[in-house]
Picture 1: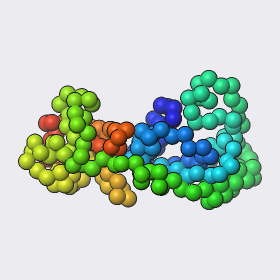
Picture 2 (picture 1 turned 90 degrees about the vertical axis):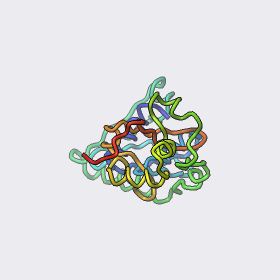
Picture 3 (picture 1 turned 180 degrees about the vertical axis):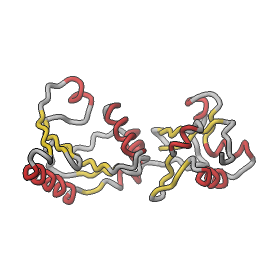
Picture 4 (picture 1 turned 120 degrees about the vertical axis):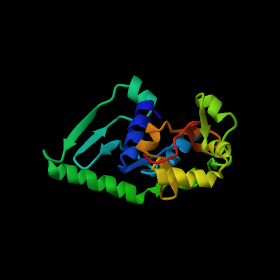
Length: 204
């Protein structure tokens, strides 16, 4: 998956904008599956015999030959057509209805995500803080340093507003990032958080 696409998906997820991707071939790498699993507002579905490339929101639709991978985005000659709801509402609605039909007949990808071993806060990858930057610790290691249980620190971070839980998934908030927190993804373990060793734990 192209880095630019990842940036855009992360931005939409942080803004709590729902994105639904449907694809025919599962060519995601394990680390990409882990990364997508950490995005609460991104859904992925498999649609057999899907060949269309269509990208749309509430106002615009692009029908194109473009695929969302590096070869297509950077090295291939592609072409597409932009349809605006304002300019041609009937055509836009026809395309939107067809896209919704494809999503309805698609199988939402859950099993492949669930098979990926997710990182528990008590099982952070060894040396994570050394790999990601000096002075940062995983939640479990920071809790140990502070003499707390991991869940106690997690509850405090939720109360502080540094992380939030949506549909059972933890995600970092804008405040958490301002405090120096980071969401990282391990190809082996999945998503986890890093925090500054001197993380301020009192509400401003």
